[in-house]
Length: 493
Image (cartoon, rainbow, N blue to C red; front, side, top):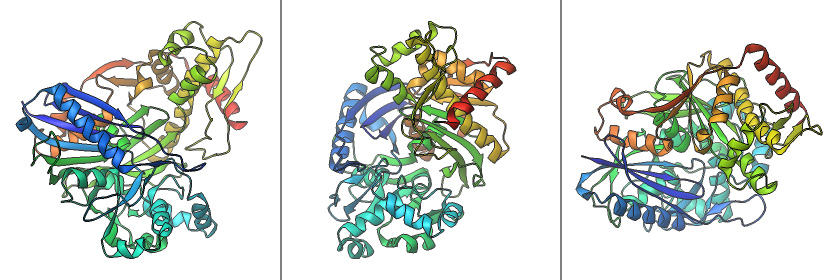
């Protein structure tokens, strides 16, 4: 039996899974690391703390698995996509803290570029909007922070990368400076058409090409391990995808129109749109989903995010004290038949796609003297599902694809009441997999395909298993009334 290591490097911690060829998890460990907030709106990570967390998770997962290290066939990496850093090409020592995807320090720079009328061209080239969320303006800021950096970067002495690039460098002893197409497509520097760095955008942001990683496919051997404690030298590093693209692949969404939603702190919905990028007319993002080998075409996706999903449940627990454990919300919400007319819009951090209303705020409407905490709990779950309807409606409009099903993962996907309402309000079947760690699973699949552990996508489909389906039960008139109430509440949020 051969094994694959999946490294899932996230915002608050690093998780390592070790899986066998039948997708049994034989080792699993999560290690958290500190968040750094230098000033309001700034969010950073210490790259060396990230690397330590990966190393500790690797060692603990290997100890739990108790497998022969010689059975390791490949390592796959998935990562927080827009977090980025600079490091020394020779020593691999970070130049400064990484700037995290949540960081807003380049908001003024993005506003300047918008004011110059450049957003439409940037969007056409990259599929993205001018927002500090993406890493291109973060890199420009780091190069401007210390005036020596741009010259060093132009000589290739200082290297830039997203977290996947940094981990490959550390795992391989500096043998490779690479990224994959999915992560590159989140930088504001990458052409959706050429699948490479865009010279026009490098000029716009004043970025030296010499510091950027080589862009590779999402599934091929990039390098081999060297000097990693607990892991033998020579294990191929063979799969990379940004976290949401990895989840799309881990959900086996291999056909155009296949769609998944990851319910985490927020909700991230991606739709596979095939080999042609669709530039959204509805406020969504266009991104590269993956590329299966250097000779294969790129596969694209439409992406929409709701900033608040599971975080709304945390607010009910911690802010309002309605229950002790997040999982308790299901029983509380199920204790009433409906919301009693209450509508909760979870816009605590503004409204994301397709609205793009950063100044919107959370609201609760329809309160009466008969409203109880159970009604508010149920309205919170329904609000999480209703905001996803807005995103899916935009996706269908942009792509022309009708949803055949809607695959779900992430922590809140375990909530049966939420999943049933999501099926009802979308009017499609909700498919929940046996393995909810789909982000790590996608990295494992890509690495296994890159080393021929699994032969092809059909081989992967043969071992992917669903746990449950939720079939729509709501009649059309009730669905229309719910959506009308939701739209009215969103309009005043």
